[in-house]
Amino acid sequence: MADETGHLETGRRVAAMIYGAMMGSVLLYAVAVEVVNLSQAPFSGFAGTPLDPMVRYALWGVALVQVMLILVVRRSLLAKSTGPAAAAPTASIAKLITVAIVTAALAEIPAVLGLVLFMVSGLRADFYALLTLSLMLLATWFPRLESWREWAAEPPARG
Image (tube, rainbow, N blue to C red; front, side, top):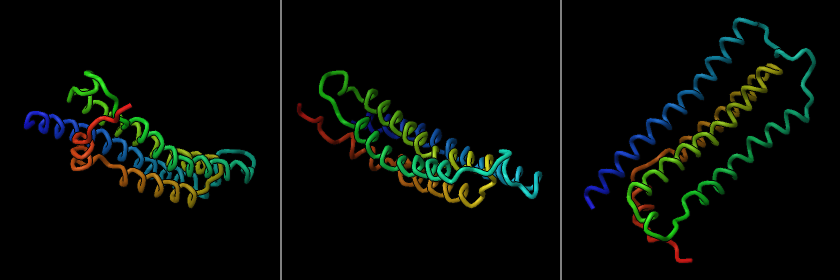
């Protein structure tokens, strides 16, 4: 059991480093936005025409759908299966690492959409609002050792 806990801690540490790197890349988007904004001042986007409001609303809609998508995907990926392969500690740890990476990737999408809105139309406020949403999602689902231990201790579902 102590060996399994050690593997769990190591796996969580690996997931946290990957997660942190992905969070850092989101913060680099803000640096890119400010560099473009300062070097192209006054910046009104690279598109030659004004952005259709429906495109803006659609991108915001996709960003907000990510919240629900994360919940559904996490629940699906974290579902425990029965069988000898599912009981292996390394398989469980690999599953938790995968869930953390997939969650971070999905949580990053609103910031990417905000970056698109900024680059196309110069909407800095939208970028920062979507960046904040991404950072909140990343902070909410950051891999925590205690929640990993709770998940590992749960018995597999009977089907």
